[in-house]
Length: 193
Image 1: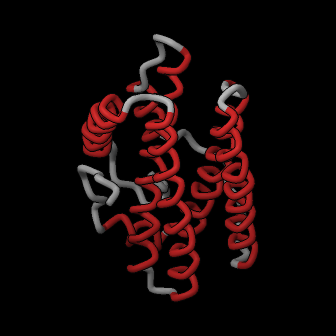
Image 2: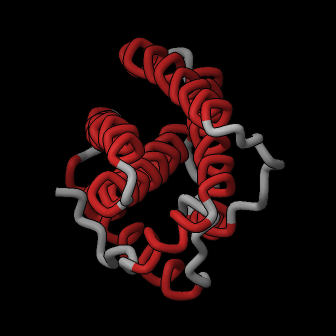
């Protein structure tokens, strides 16, 4: 369904489980960044009324996810650590085309958001299946379902504001680049991506 070219190495779940405070911290910041990214897109494109209407609830949902992860940390007597550099997102941002018409840059933003949501969905699925603790498996299953919906929304919005052919072509380029990025980044259990 997601079309990702490179599946996550299954050892990632074992590494994540060993550094639960770290993975929850990184997850919290990923949710925060997702909310602020949607706010940024809304601010840049207020004239895209349908998109604004569809993204506004995502801001609320992502911020709610941030709060859910904070509560999970608190319930486990763990603390939110400091935000760390996200090598994955930074590498993907370098691939993003930043020239051209404002509408072209919107498609780049939407496709990058779709890809990050797709990868998050894939990783949440792995956590929901392979974590030892049942409560955590359920916790991550709910995030998996949500991210799948967000992924679809971003792809659909890109198609709404461009041609389907352009979106398909660029999406394949993003998927190929993302596979290369993941091959180049060291597998770490303290990062969601």
